Length: 107
Image (cartoon, rainbow, N blue to C red; front, side, top):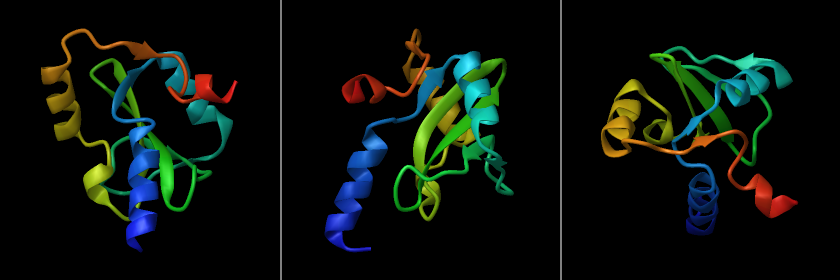
């Protein structure tokens, strides 16, 4: 990837960082397109890319639901159980998103 492309990917990933999402949001994404499951990656990906190799990933863990944009070629961006534990430890009462955070910008 070029530096410009890396910057564009980083900007896109920042539009939907690891977040708590509602069960309805999670379930809507599970049913909108065939989900993609990758061995070793918790949850599922929405099969249609946001751009390049960036996809939305959704994970259910302990009765809570999480989502984020992730870059497939960069496992460090993936939602992992460790990332969820760190998120929960640093966010005692996070907002629970009902839809993508950048969707309001598009309306």
